[in-house]
Image (tube, rainbow, N blue to C red; front, side, top):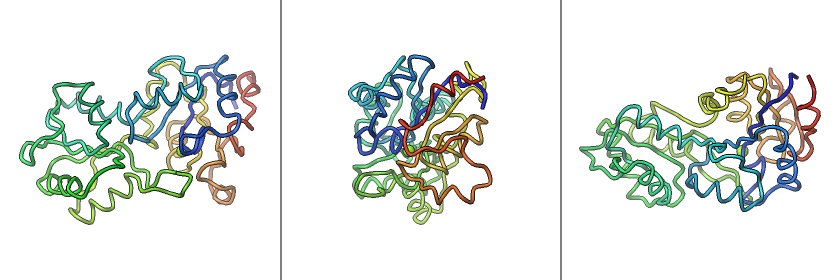
Length: 263
Ligand SMILES: [Mg+2]
């Protein structure tokens, strides 16, 4: 493996589960952050970027600069601006709707059915049935349909909880519609801010999920370290045509020092 000059960590199932850090995860990331820039990349759009910033800082994880958290929400917002969209029905938790509104005060995030140009579905974990209907009615009328990511479930200490991939199946059944844009992993666009500074082969991505994290690394051409403390078990890796560069039980078992120093 070539010398690693930047690290990207997935969050849920990699650094923590249900908001509780894995053993020595914080210490390991803190140590390695003294030598290379550390980025965080999560598909979870149930909370705002402010929440994640505070959570990482509260856990003691190093956050060298604000823009080191890469989120599907940021990409979705940038794309809304690029397209000059104004009437965007945002299916998201109230704090995420508030965050969007604060980021761009020109957006109308609760447009009528007739006004709606775009429905953006985030990982909404507090909706009521009426909100599901509001989305379905807008999709039925032909509004464009984007999702922040397409994970089927989110890991949780109690078991898998339905995420946007599951919502997509529901909306497909109700309206026949599928999203025209999916942000988030495994879309390699998520790493574009890092590739402005580093070549893909200089980047190591650490994650726990094959169909999002590993798939992103494959598409982007960067290295991948799989941790088995989250969703994936060793048996899942056996039949893969391409194997992760590193497989470890958890983040603290990865010898980052040798990766950074090896030419
Ligand atoms: Mg994960």
